[in-house]
Image (tube, rainbow, N blue to C red; front, side):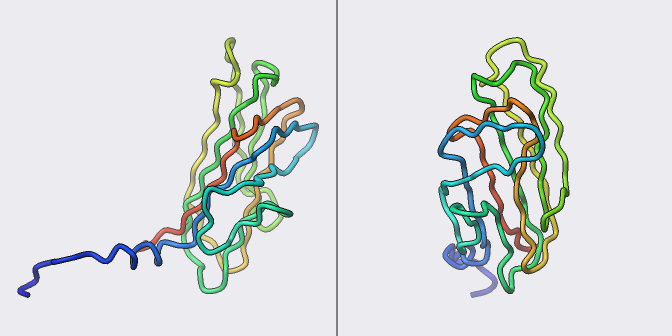
Length: 156
């Protein structure tokens, strides 16, 4: 029709922008010394069934889905965390530390107001997997205060 766009099939766009998921922790998790994996045991969605929220708490790139992925991690301290507690959020890729995000919330008020957010685009191959760890003795992640989200990018 002379180059006139008449409709867009959004169902096609959704099917190509997968896999993606958003997971969170449904209960409080207290961290001791060393690197401890965050237990994201609840999902808001999981297009492609790529996140294991029941045993290993990891995202794995499925067959045929290598590419660029946008990763977002958010943590919010529970009110019982020590004020000004330094802690590190670590993205593990294939079992090794990949990206270290250090926080230093020298905040004198309610620590529940402090959230650490990190996002990055990562190039991933089939069977690569990502996990999130926290290193912070005394850090308390309140129920629903941890978020791990991954979306495959299309067109890049």
